[in-house]
Image (cartoon, rainbow, N blue to C red; front, side, top):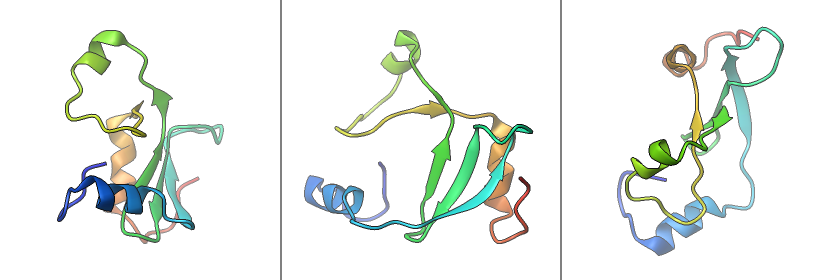
Length: 91
């Protein structure tokens, strides 16, 4: 998780293990109600539901991977919901 500010392991761990996080559905690019979906958190971040990246070549291209991080793939069109945060949810 790349956050602005202090990147020390202690601060990242504290951020990752916060006891309670609330999610707000921003939108989904799926007509059947399944993934991919974008959520906003109450700590000014996003949670993305997508397809797990399992391709060894793609995983090999990732940089600075920290313990506890995982990777999902989403269609570019899903990011439009981040631009429209606060707008009515398109479900």
